[in-house]
Length: 275
Length: 284
Image (cartoon, rainbow over the protein chains, first blue to last red):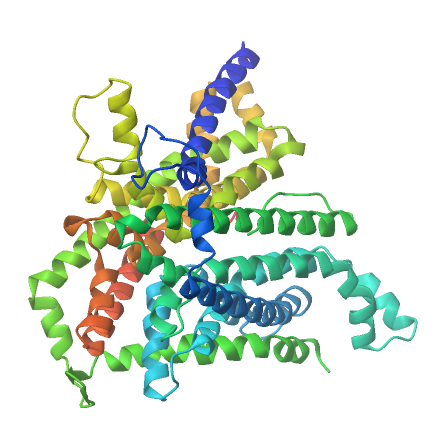
């Protein structure tokens, strides 16, 4: 009786779960549908298949420079925030130090802070100290919001490490740094790669901070925002969006694969997902 | 070197970065909110003028109340919709497939927020996907107008965007619940429903509380969604902050609104935590 009840409940929940996933995926599934639709009006019924919108993307110089700007910002952001993430995650998982909770709390704060608060506070400071708005100012902002995500991923990697591995290396004559480089680093490498990929994706897609801080060099999302005002440009926006979403999903799958490999490498069991 | 010194040295680059680019700028915003600006000249005498204006001008108060109301609504909808998913994954999915489900739930979150919000505009519009489909199927005769450029659209879009933030903390807490407690409850005569109500839910509350805060706090300051799908009746405080900074050249007023928004959010979050304090006490 109880088993039958649980099974019935499971079936109901399963239907709900499938509907919920449909809700979650609706926007990104419809995106390519309209990107390949041969009409400037974004509505059903579809009128025919075309790759015209993708072809048009090839001859917009402003778009190409926005892509390059975004790539540059995302790569630098990924490197710096992962480096800062390694320091903080290693410190938090291996050592005890005064005011640890407070310090880590401040570092992780951007995770819940509305992005507009981060954006305007940085804008005020940059303008006051006379730092001209450019890709550099966007990078400074992006590193701030990416670092907590990197720490969340890297915490998982560092936490499951066995301290005795490191102690064994030190007993066998390695210096502290040597032990870290030869023993710890290889074990957390998959986590580091996952962190790089996640930070890259967040930076590529981030809009608000870039909107406030990018000055005359728009990033790709800022360029996209400008295009949304022109109805006749919408199919091209859909095509561009499709490419962006496919790229993000591929990078995320890659990051997840690395993260899982890291978990397996350290002999842990998988609890699922980042964060 | 002592362990705690090592820890401090190691954490210092990240901590100093946060100090320089988060704590200092937030302090600067607070300072700025006491200054005034007349077109391009900044007057650095400390004054409460901005706060006075923010409190007396009904536009600001109205936007603030609406932002908090929308965020509250979004939080309720998001968490209520997310709980069954977290529950399903934790209790009804085979252990080997849980990671896959959690990953599936988070994938959309990693794609461009701007694109997703824009797609909701396309889906919910007057000539949008939903209306043209429903009319094509003969379900409705005229387009539904209550789903775009108003509050409903903002709630739907934000509930979509923040779904993983609600699912993950609840899932983590559900995973930690000792399953034998549930069996004990049923052995002692509780039904499945009362077991859920009296055992599972109270034990899951820390996750629900975390989910509420993680959704509520950032949504108050959301800019893209109200701007793209909110219409005039769905604008929120972040839109006004942006206007003050980038359009009206009144950064001090924008700073004041930012500070007030953060203060309101903090107060509400603290009240919420206090109301739920009995769920957060550790086992003693």
